[in-house]
Image 1: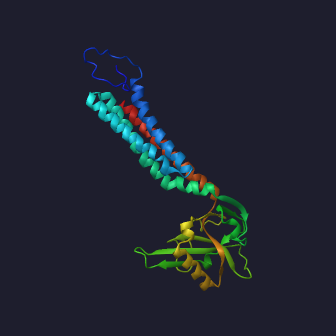
Image 2: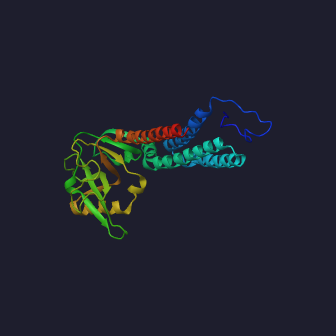
Image 3: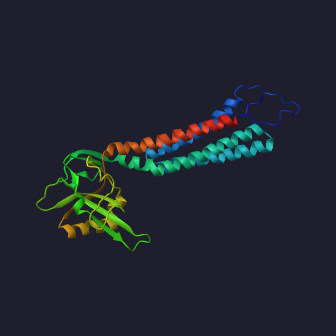
Length: 280
């Protein structure tokens, strides 16, 4: 049998000696799978380091090489090589789709949270000025959400009206100036007054938070919701308040994005390996 990685004319052509190879089947199975593993590794490395766009160039180059490989061997009449090329091209395309999905769904957020600082035993009365570099916050055990003073602002100007919800993070005591440094926030998870259900608001054991990205911090809808809470409840937001997503264990949630991406890659790599074995 002919090794499928060798090129050339038909084995029946004059002067051509048939090459013996015991790796033909293993090549047909392993080479496409290695292509998929390589592409997924590129997205994993790029996503973790925030350079997924740059490393996505590698799979695009592989697509071009696979197409050239298939075209050349199709003209040569090398059926085995054409099958190999098609399997490799399919592997690269699957890797592109799965990798891009994982970057958008998990790895971008994992990168954002990993490059930020984590603070523990944070008091809700502490100024947010010293926590502006934070990505995760673990508050003291007596910290809670003041869901009774939650406020929802509905932006009717949007095509699909969104309710921007905020609730003050409190220690249950009344401050002299009612100044709020941290606000739990979310969209479409509260009523205009109260019934705040964003994140882990319904979990009494939750005392942690993930700091929302800058585009959320600067969103006009959330700014109006905070101002609405100030006027409705006589509160005062600090000049550098932070919007957070309330969660039970922010560090575990951050690590969960990594675990989710790895699990997805392993599943698709395993399924494609089975497909290659069946075809081979």
